[in-house]
Each structure stands twice: as C-alpha cells, then as structure tokens.
Length: 102
Image (tube, rainbow, N blue to C red; front, top):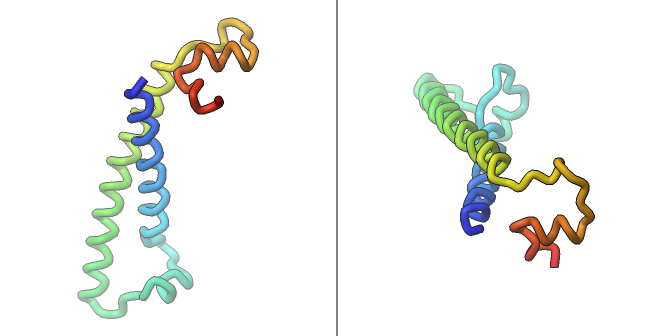
C-alpha cells in the first residue's frame, strides 16, 4: 500500500517537473518569450542559453522516461476492475485507495 503512494508521489513530482522544464525551454521561434524571460543578445549569453537548453532537454527526457515507467508500474499493480462489474461501494472496498473516498 505504501508503494502505491510512493509511485503516485513520483508521478506527481515528475509531471510538475516536465511541465516546468518544457515551458522553460526555448523554442525555434521565440517570439515575445525572449523579451519576457530576458533574451540574450551577446555571443556568450547565447552559448549559456544553448547549454541550459541542452541540460533541460536531457533532464526532461530522463524524467519523462521515469514518468512513463511509473505509469506502467501503477497500471500493472492495480487490481483488474474490468473483468466484472462493480458498484462504487464494492470498488472502494477492493481498492487500496479506499481511505481517500471516505
């Protein structure tokens, strides 16, 4: 039961990190985002920005893989509710998350 809560916590943290990291990355067409974030005009500033984007891309990829694996694990360990028809009260008794609905 504690493993499910740990996995759900990992999913939540990973999802928030992915959203923040993707919004921080530069796009091919910056538009006004360079003005809002503080665009870099010098050569050294551009190099720093490219380096930051590479690091964000790498961490976004790693966290996305962790997120996908955690979703698969949660899907595998959850009880199979589709094999028979359950009412809400029966589902709450079978679910490990029944304390949430009380």
